[in-house]
Image (cartoon, rainbow, N blue to C red):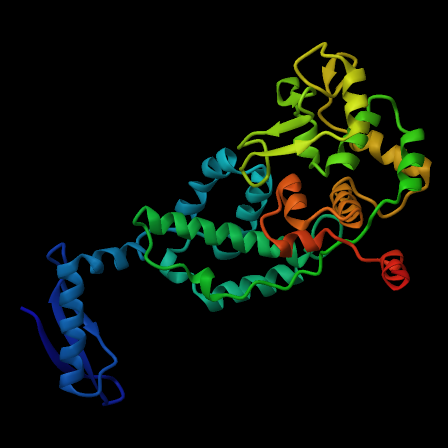
Length: 338
């Protein structure tokens, strides 16, 4: 049944075709980019080998699986493994809006580049264009969805891997000096002060501080234990308790399950109180996450080795750690004086 043949087109030019039966028994006639009979026979032999090895079926799955199918499978995975799952839901919305419910073989690297251009020109509800980091997170969402589809046998290749992500100029270097921090503490409400001291003294993320339970705090050994699943990276780590934080934690008592509470209830958000405290203290351009920059910079100035800082903060590489370490005029002057 398998064969090669030539057929004339409307322009009078001949093209080579191969004929074969696919795994379902269907008779297939397919045009191939061959210039000679020998080349056409090569494409036929390659196709028959793919059918024999099962690769043919895998390749054609990508033409039967739709984008919506792999994106609709993604939320369950995202909610179970990522704290940023709500951002993934927003990414899925934009991806569906641009591509539509096409089959996976229709999504190409050039098509993804067009998506990037489209997102660059789009405007959100606040009249702003999305940041490069936002677009990159959307591409990462699509990339992960494809990788999961490949794992499940629904796709054979990932077009996102051939696309260059946008450069991100989102490195912040805001560090709170000691005078600013003490001023911030003075104007903060009582329930906020222990949280700020914890961030300042440990470099822990807000998402690691607010859910902190007393069972994770060992005042005897002066160690806070963050278990896997309680950190952004998904890996546990030990965080030392400084003398100042020790005094604060000791004064709180163990009235309930959670360490940081307000009127007997766990503190779930400090958005308003932290914003008001910053305003009262006259501190500008400072986000809660900048406490990590502040902690890393303070530790480095005190001569703490990089690997020790990485163990405390949970940074995986020196590259990531250096993004949080700020070198300012004070460091330069001290270097010269030494």
